[in-house]
Length: 556
Image (cartoon, rainbow, N blue to C red; front, side, top):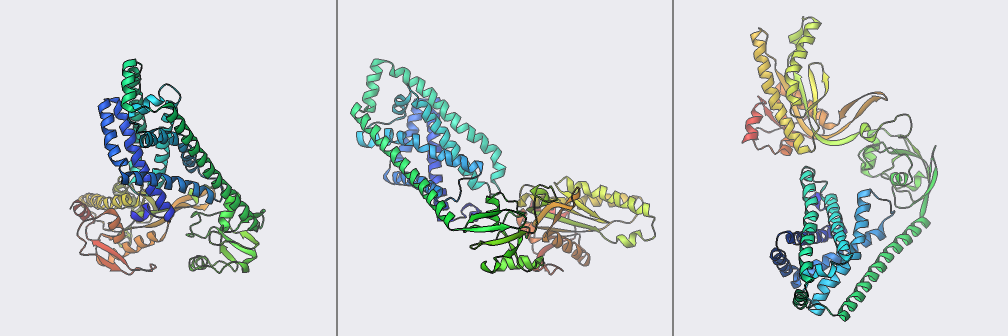
């Protein structure tokens, strides 16, 4: 979990840390405003509590350091971008982030600055009276929404890769809507009350004295400070954009020419991979793994300029060797041209097959179940073909519902066996579903065997292999006549584990990877290591004579 949350360079970690500080401040600030919905004393009481932290020397340093670091990193990231084209969520966050200082500067100047310089009592009532009769109240309400939406997008972009966040999103959306609504309701309620008091000349004088209301000269000074701060921000933004433009012009002068066989000839920036060059220039280029070097579908033949490219890395060399790639073949996601090259794309996404990316391949870490009937050949020797089919269908009718009820899908039937995959939202839930399914299959088979015994037929025994690993789910077959299936080492491991159950005389072998992912806390003292044919590394697995025992283990 830690590696997922804090992966990235120092700028990323600083941005996340400063963002969390500011998010915490904003969260409690909005809750504070919302308390005006109930009573003024609650609103001021919480504000005093917040000020005890944020107005403390250490709290002030942390808060304003986080503010300047977060804003500075945002401007720095703009200056370092290669392009201003970005996903909608990222673009929205950037635009909202740039809008925040336009109102936040005014808010800080008329509160913290006024308090420190002119000893103004900047309670919430002072702030509301300052804004209420004009458009400032609506601008500050808009600031509240902009800050909150910006924060929520940032939080989502940070946590979306964790396993628990997708499950919490439906509930957190409700909280995300409630917080600003609560704050705005409190603001409007307290605003109407205090403005009604302020309309009374006697109470107005008391309020002015209580808040130590700034003089016209003080207000003019604060307006000048606000304008200077906005000008400084505009200069900082302008410098960031100027750096972006200068870097882009510099990269353009330090560019490389790429010619595609049966395609365009373009000039691209140096430093980008060939796949990134294709994508940046809207040139179709297959890459099923998304340019992570985990497939070879982006490979190209370098017809000219190959000698100017660095030699393949170990990862690229192994991938090319695995597909017996011809001389001159390279992975587009791994090479960064610095001299002119001519490249031939071996696979064209716009040629021949009209398929979506997900249909061509989607990589997931999922649990697979390989199941086979024991002694099928000897059992059916001499039987009529129709009787054999009838037995198999009855067998599958008995056990398959146990698989599908736990979220499994039978990928394919193989004579007297089957392969099932548990395609759930996470590897953890997939592993748990597979364990439960194996136990349910065992119980379903026991009920079916009792029925066979009443008919005078021998009992059926099975072997099952369970494993969790990386799979590719996609369509296999000719265009228009293809079936969705799974491919990957995990399938081979599950199949080999199932084969081992025959020699051991057990019903199930379940890998340690799957047990660990499922959080299995049963007895693991019988865990054994297996050297499986076609599998490079030994696989640790737990043998179970009766898969229904899993239910006992899961409950301990």
